[in-house]
Length: 289
Image (cartoon, rainbow, N blue to C red; front, side, top):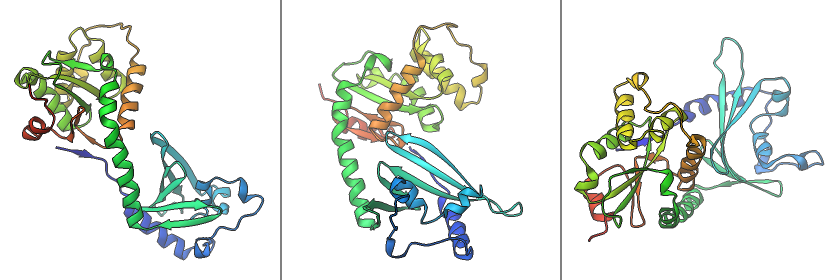
């Protein structure tokens, strides 16, 4: 019941490190040490880590293209594309930056006073356990304070029994669950009010949020995406006073705060689960009358 994000980093990094071994122009720092000079002091932690893998000359010669993408608040994915020659595929170095911590091919490095400290797998696990614990502890407060007026309300069940369901329009399991909630009248079946937080493009959100019947529109949208007939959908309202971008930004900020990396994600102040498993939902999430 999950859609997980995957990476092809391992193969390209293997090729990349082979290139490093064969290329005489590449320099290595010994004992994890970076020499600090007046020029190097101005460089960011990230730049100083990158220098361990890519010499400055490669950037000057235009052999490296650096792009970055914001994944979550304070979390960036950096891609370094290394041009070799026309007959050889480009190589890649991927670095994930979490504030001042950087992950290179699964390794965590922390730069402190010019020293790059390689963190062991145990410390990486500890780092994530601590991070995950904070996320888990924040869920009840997020559930309490989330702006339900911005979400898509389905059903009028017992207000004591509420579930917030995070879905993406590209996830097949989300498409099915959205249709099941509506078609099978889960609100009546479980005496529960559902609030859907939908992650999709602004056209998809507008189709649902600007409709008079958001429940029906959500069903139609997810059904059309699943059957690959989305282009045939006709929006019920041409103009809309709802600020779609504001809603979209809000949805993503909530998802980022909860560090959601698998959907459907279902939670209230009592539980949080990935995927719709009926017995788990009933046992953990519903407040008994």
